[in-house]
Image 1 (tube, rainbow, N blue to C red):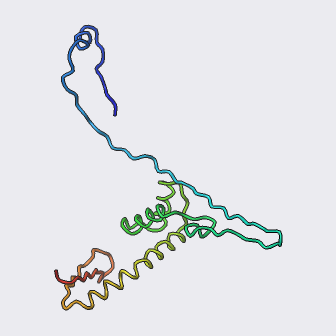
Image 2 (cartoon, rainbow, N blue to C red; image 1 turned 90 degrees about the horizontal axis):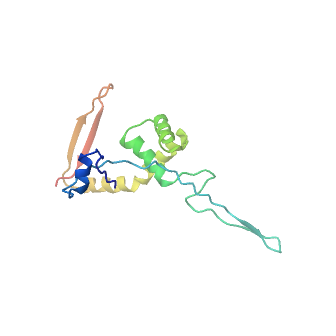
Image 3 (cartoon, rainbow, N blue to C red; image 1 turned 120 degrees about the vertical axis):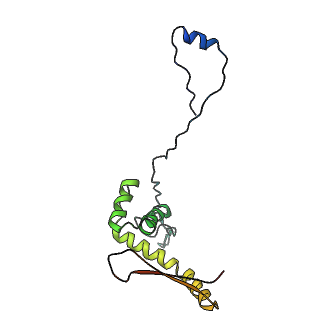
Length: 159
């Protein structure tokens, strides 16, 4: 919070210095902090006992490869590709511009496949519920696309 006082003008400033404070005004501004990528290094140590047997530590599940990206970068990428409909190339550029992280389009494809696979159980449950409902509502809305016969079908049980 910043408090801004008055400017001193000879004569007027003297009168203001002896005056009682009446009231103040407030304004606000919104800003975001600069995004910061946090890098965590995992090291697996290897030990050899006197008999010559070696034991190597395992990496944690969140670090399965030499270069890994955390859930926050993945979430931002999936948001850009799914909610904002950015193509893979533009999503990779946006991640570089926003966070300074170079992500390949192949990695983005893998993340999209993993996210789709994570929804398999949900899709199966919804399909089962719709299949067992006595009545469902179906709405086929046409999309504005250059291709003919492009549409989106929404199915829901009655309320």
